[in-house]
Amino acid sequence: MRVFLLIAMYSVLMASEMFGWKLGFGTGLSIKNGFLYVLLLGIALELLIHRRPGDALTIPVNGFFLALIAYALASWLITDREYQFAGYTHGERFISLKGLLIDHYLFFAVYFYGTRTQKEAVRVTIFVLILFVIGNLITLMDAYDMPDLGLIKWIAGRISGPLGEPNQYAAFSVMFLPTLVALTIRNGVSLRVLFGLGALATIAVILLTGSRGGAVGMIGGLAVGSIVMRRYISPGRIVKVIVLVAPLAIVALGVVASKFSGLLEERVEQSSAGNLRDASAGRTMIWETGLRVQAEDPALFLWGRGWDTFRPEVRQASHNTYLEYLFNLGVIGLGLYLGLIASITRLQLYGLTGATGDERLLIIGFVLGWLCMLIAVFFVNLFNPWVFVWAYTGLVSRIAVHCAPARQRTTALSVRANSRLLSQPEAGHSRVTA
Image (cartoon, rainbow, N blue to C red; front, side, top):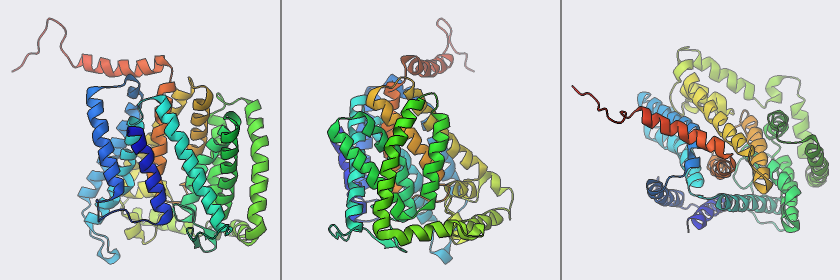
């Protein structure tokens, strides 16, 4: 029942984004929150009764996530600003905090703690990947009018994708692409065909978004990933992947160029513009303005101007997730966010040391895709896709915890146990109280 609810929630939310369903009755009264709170209640009751030793590995992840939420809440409370000129009240900023940070942790927790076994986590992860592939196949069908479904929107000649705005969907898609490629190597014939077709469709959709941030994220993430993963991926396997990906990329480029060559030419021309401002589509000007506003009070570089203040202060979206954290929460908040990213990556590498078979491919694909997405969001703000990203992260983190060698799970648990023992009096002694 629990696994069914996890699959149902992901499916319903993806469908609601694609078809534009308004599944709610008002602020806080949505289908998403209904699923989320029911699952959280069940998981909380279960954890009170039964604790799983391997979960101790996630202490750093939970710690950074909760510290970041606590700090963001404090910043929201302290900076009680009403941006009336932008129609942005203090209460609306709290709704933003819930949707763009608190819900991220809740989705991670629900999909991590909601899958009790490695088999359950793999099962739901494969379903999520298949759902992603279906979304991209529908996107391509609609783009080429085979048939014209009227579901996908075009923004300035660029495809929006199932989750909306082109740049966001490109950053989201590059996170899944390495896993789709990896699974074409291992699985049976039917799944190889499905995931190979999914990888082809994903490359084509990324090209149709015209997102240079997504392209830079994909190239940069794979370059960084090849260094991070050099202990886990043999040169022979890298060559095998390149041989597999090259034809897919060529076919995808040909498919896109057959109808949308103008889009590709336009994006290439803009990328080769003579000045940095035009080449970055004005992003550098926005970043410069944000830093100038921040510099009006240099102390705010340390603790920030308050949650979700960049847009009302600068009058534009930041187009840079890391700058957004620096502006809103300062070096302290950005440091907590980077600590969270590092703890997630480290957890996956722990799991990779003991993973085999499909679990190993899922973790390797996740790490490479995670790095691609993290570079892509240097150029874009994610909104709707984040909950899907953190749900997927929770699933693969569950797989990593189960795959981690027993020594690492035991060490993490013993550290936790020793800290409790140190806080208790030794046998035969009692605490002295005044």
